Image: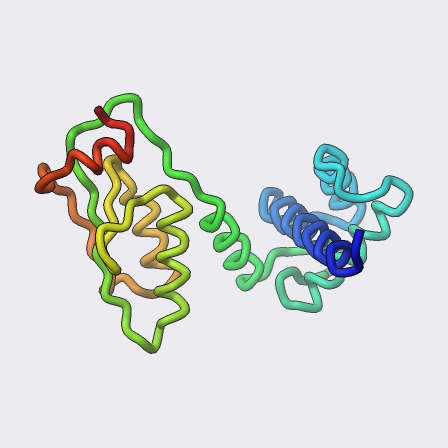
Length: 188
């Protein structure tokens, strides 16, 4: 394995470990160092992330790094989630979000139209990527469509990225010439 591949693998493992630590702290609210290790170690064991002999060392080091980044705070022998840590965890959850599909289609289309200003170009690009990952279909540059309810995730994106006035959620009974859309979403 090449040096670049090994560095990439280590970075991915480190990211997974940091996410497990943040999720563990978020779940319990506050965790002592003694409690963080068993919870995180159990999750790491299931994922096969780290060698057993050094797991506690890795957990302690990663938690410390998260505290240095301002994502956790260490106080009175335990870690607490900071506002920044909560935001990052929320973004990670959004990045991996998959829309649930009900068994039956209600024959309504959900259209998401956005006009996010140029000064928020990175946010616009990120939202487009999230829409694609979640399974929405791109009708035009800033117009996406989905056959099932997705209002909750759209509301979350509006709030999280501060673009509430820039995104419009529409429920339509009909879309002209939608045969290709029904085929794309396997609704026939």
